[in-house]
Length: 543
Ligand code: PLP
Image (cartoon, rainbow, N blue to C red; front, side, top):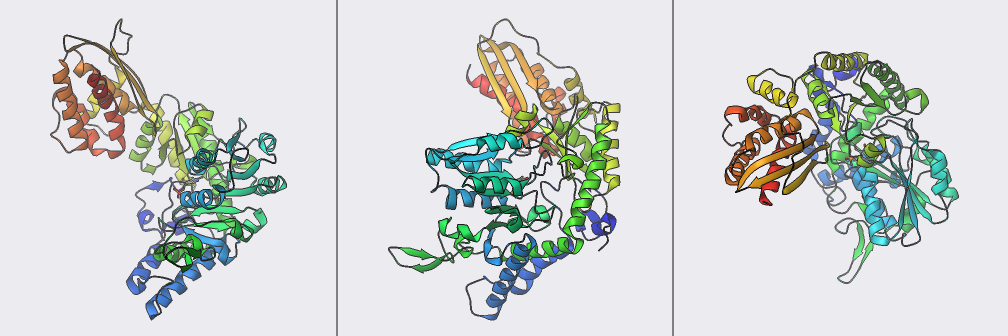
């Protein structure tokens, strides 16, 4: 099939009308109609449980479920019985942590992972370490955003039981040399788990050639339904595994006192399986196979490389990660814009019809290494084209040129909020205070420190240190301006009214506070606006 994003978009109901340039496929991909229809057809025409009944519908359900397994296993080069269905990558990794790692690790043993991991390939290992007393070791990255292979090798010794590594970084776009890493791990007697969330959807994967022991991936990132994913388990590990969850269909024989278990992969599929999801995911795989994974990969390299060059040329823009010619995939383009919080950038881009993601992308330790709290990320897939890259760089240039307001969209209230962003209130140090409180929105990186000098049950003086997006800073200034001089009881009453308006459909605010009214209609910004008010509330409780 020749590769035409414009033609491809016609298959996608969300994209067909061209209302949005969707640049968030690293979070989740859009789905073509045939995937939606395949899942709907399962429920419309069959809807019975798999692996249970002997009547026609149940037999057909089992046939479709197992055919989906065969299709998806083939897609990653696995044998059919080496693929367990899971909910997503996160569940796949947790399955390995519980069913394989937890009983093989202990004091004196170690897991090697890296600083570039998604929380899904970090937190489960922290939990294993806590439970077993094993050590966690983290390979560094180079200034270019590549894995530091020398450091990784230094970390490998006979104590290492598992190397857990991402195939492609969801922030840097770095494609790790996973085959080499698996080989190194095996040379040291360790197993290798590859987080394939950003791998399988975007490039040809052959788990046997790669040599990994476990490969986890999500259906929804490759145009399948949400709630279904795959975990490849190398057959040689079958005997080393214990069940993940107990229940129906994962058993061989059950007595009141004990149970023997089914063989993998059914051993890991306790309870009613997501047959509709599996059928939909198989349809997505067929769609990708028709396009050809080499073509998908080449398209992303070309497009990502072009977008990167355009964006990097804009003064004030910093692009992270390697370019596609030196270790990147092109599919992920993460950046910051001087003087603009990533949330504000994302909101401005939304207004320009571009859907991008802002925040820490579930990779807080990596953001710490990069020296930023949050970034903006555009990610590309088969339905994106050069004009999306052009629109992205034009919108970012536009934002810088016009010094965009707090959030785009003109209204008196917005202008007032903008005024409070541009004219910060109570930022100077105060000579004395009794109460100090910190507030953090860890996901987006808004931070706040409030100091209060309260005398005779009134707020005599206050100071706000605010770092974060425009909405959070404007809201902090508005709170400071409103609450200074108020009696503590009255201040608490105002805070409740603001919170009720923002979160509970409470009455609209009046006067200067009306500046916050439009935020109630922006669910993505509620947390930003609430931070200051919540922190003031906490501070006043300590008075
Ligand atoms: N690993 C990586 C590299 C990811 O990008 C993601 C999702 O963004 C995950 C794991 C988790 O995927 P899921 O939420 O589908 O479990």
